[in-house]
Image (cartoon, rainbow, N blue to C red; front, side, top):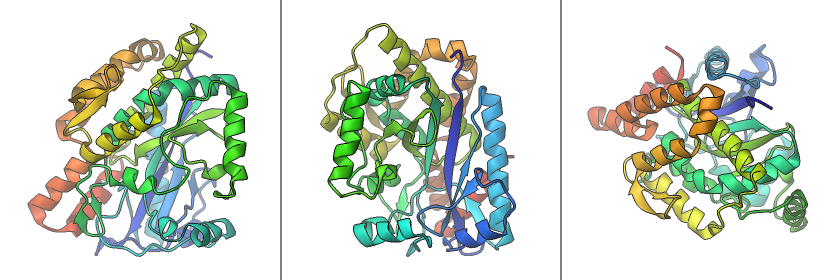
Length: 362
């Protein structure tokens, strides 16, 4: 496999264009749209829609797919009187409504407040693999580098009408699921399957779809699915996250084929790294996977790019990634932008309005 395909799933809020508050019309929007069912789907809450791209070989193709999917979702939202917002949490208070499906209703019954409060929007990246063996090798070797992706994508500073103190509060809320978060190395496909079977045997989660690890083997596609990022405010930011993710996967496979062992860093340290990334995003220090000591976020992301540079060059993505990262660093993450709008206007509804205007391609 020369250049691996990459695809992206994005989750969005459906908001009232006047008040900025989320509205429970996702199932109605899906009922009236004529879009491909693989491109637009519902989510746990009726205040959301999810989009998905086709597998893409180039970043240009992926960017076009992301923009097209956002336009389709915005059109479906507009048909039922709401706007599409690339916000990973709602800045304004909301009481989410569980979508009408047996599975989602059982999740709400079993997990109570944890399920009801999961009105969060993520960006999931799928990268093609040739075998489960490759996939597990990837899972074991990308672990140290997932936290910087949280920082790059941070887009959820507000919760229940207040500043949470985090750049990515979505990443904190997500950890409430008992099956979410960092994981230890597996070592083999058999060990991975044994782990999955053990989780299911506890009777805690409904099914394998609730294996909410930071990264996992996809149940439906021949891919590794990386699930740590917030939904990004602009399509270009999602392209950046996807490009870095694909390069991480390719780098991990190269290391596996060369007989290099995974970093044995403990899962507890990875939790600390993820917490720091969610807390400060790109505005503070992250844990450097080379030393596991604090370092400026821009330096850690630079180290990530250096780690995957050969894969970026081979895919023809190196120049584009540097360009996209410079753009993000110049304007700041979604979290920074949201806070700047609030500081300027004093109005959380204005934060939502600004996000809706930035969600669609210019």
